[in-house]
Length: 101
Image 1: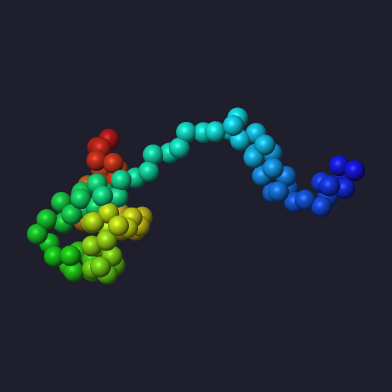
Image 2: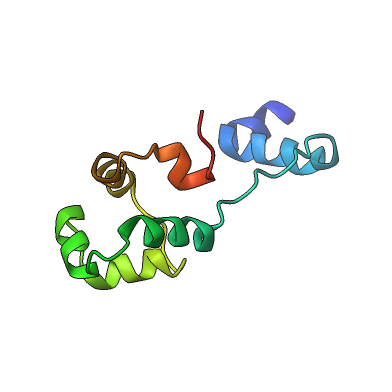
């Protein structure tokens, strides 16, 4: 009987059922989320007196998107982080975490 049941359920459903049944044993600590407001303020500080439009053009994004990033309403993409790192000679790690290795 159990073989028939296994054949009718996908492996994904079976694993999900096992996970739900033993959920209390598999609880893992949550990863800390990035603080977009702090990241945005670092980017704003890096920008200095450079107009948003100019920096946005350099980053290949719209001025409104840069504004959202600086205000912590949107996360910068990997490409934006790399371009910021190259332009201002700061590590991506510093932009994201404020730490220097």
